[in-house]
Image (spheres, rainbow, N blue to C red):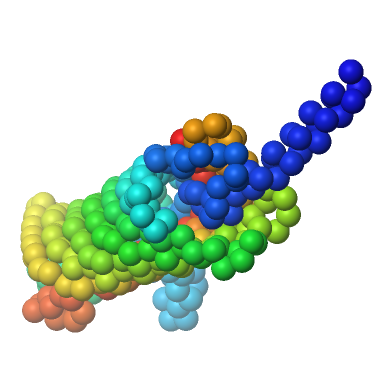
Length: 350
């Protein structure tokens, strides 16, 4: 009986070694006792990312005196939020090619408030220079608020090819299409203004939108290094060049008291256009995987944890005023959009 148990244990160890995997979705070679490959694989990623964007400063706060100013720049308080990604793929019948589709969803909303403590400590950033009958340069505020919302949908279709460089290292180049819908809302509110006779500045409200549709080719190079038993080091680098359609707008409403009577200003701007925008992603981390060999197929499953960072160039195209005259000339902000954080992946290859 003991000899039988010992024989089964040795056989199970050998069987497990035959099933060692290297690539992210499929092994390089099948063990001799497996007759065919699986055909479909899927994955689910839990994301804990922070979304940030350059060019969203909304308040300039003076922390010193009028004659010796020390300015603090305030922007929304960006934070980390949970998100997800799902993927499904199939193994093509020839030459170790895979076809994969992935969808990523990220949503974030953040806000910030600043108080100067005294009337006249904050300069507005987004109020039109034509506001308050052209007297915006004289407007100073006690309170300022900002709220930023971003909704994103990423769609990736890629054709992958697995290359076994050695028994411990694999490379996986891929190319395909990337589509992204980025919808941003940014609102800024200033209140409790000073008095510059005969005008008292009451409040200024600016509501802005920045939507972009992005489509273009993408390429990725991923690698997996087997460092010990079922544990691997993972890394990937990707980039895309996207044709981007922007839909940008802003609504502004300003309230003042002019010689004791309320007066209102309203300004609206809209624009739509196409442009080219690059995007790049880098990720690295560690993974664990194992497999089950059946007489007719192999099941590969595993988990990984990695750090992922994405850069979307010039996605903030909100209008900014670039002069201090009543002409109120505007230009796009052209700030970059960033996503980064933890990505936890679970996959199974049926």
